[in-house]
Image 1: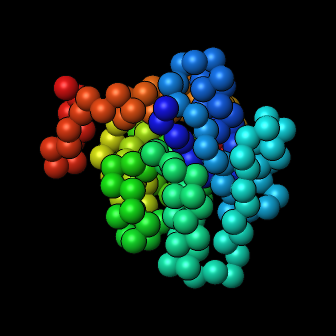
Image 2: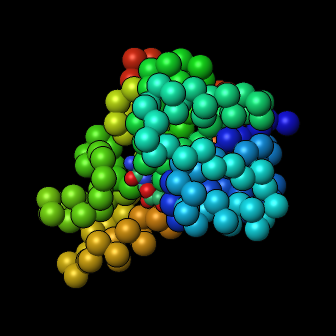
Length: 199
Ligand code: GAR
């Protein structure tokens, strides 16, 4: 059975959605390890409550190369096949990415390439877009970049606040992350330039 490594920094609702899918048999894989770079992350406590292997590797004060090496070692120790970033708010070094070729996914709360980086939903409202959404993509060395696996759109409503729009998007995030993991685990795709072509 394939083994997932989930990286978080905070609330961990995407991690929980993945864990629910695994528990319900909607994802045919096991969660081998949940790693947080922040000791206070709510998702870390949730992972422990669920009886999962939950590990904190604090990133504070470490330079990127050193941190990423610790991260890669922990993932390898747990024989992880697929790394899922779920609100993991760090850029990964080229060295780390090379260790897991086409084996790192990220979820982002916008229709990339619009609004990469922090506070994507706020950026979307500020820009005045009428449609928002979320994206699951392979991770490369750039921020919220890399070939796109799944995207879905939601409307932006006249009276939307950041909270209301974020909640509408988050519901879709929870759904498409499971879909994307299943697509990658099935392996029926090839990469043509930036395009992920399903076969
Ligand atoms: C999610 O909305 C995720 O898309 C976003 O952080 C939130 C984490 O929530 N990620 C990014 O903005 C990455 N650039 P969660 O901890 O409840 O899953």
